[in-house]
Length: 78
Image 1 (cartoon, one colour):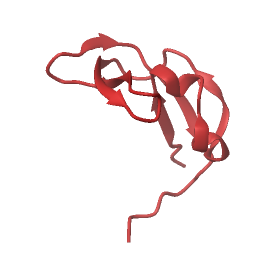
Image 2 (cartoon, one colour; image 1 turned 135 degrees about the vertical axis):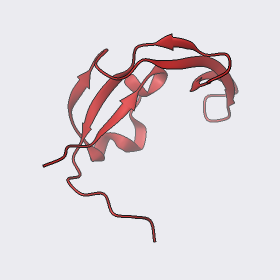
Image 3 (cartoon, helix red, strand yellow; image 1 turned 60 degrees about the vertical axis):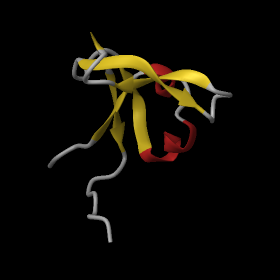
Image 4 (tube, one colour; image 1 turned 45 degrees about the vertical axis):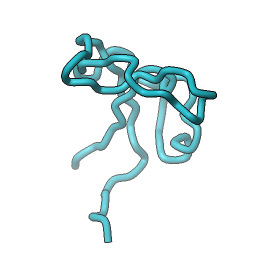
């Protein structure tokens, strides 16, 4: 059986928002892939604060974390 996870970094680690009902257990810190991250987005949700994004051009390799999804099957979009 496959298990699906969410890869997290930045504010997602402390603010799951609407994801909380879809996840199981705690974050597994620093067990996700190393991704090139950079503050390259102005977040309207966070009062125009800079937000971390995957940035292939300017990003710095950073560790990420994972959290398990409660879903067992993910259906294709309709």
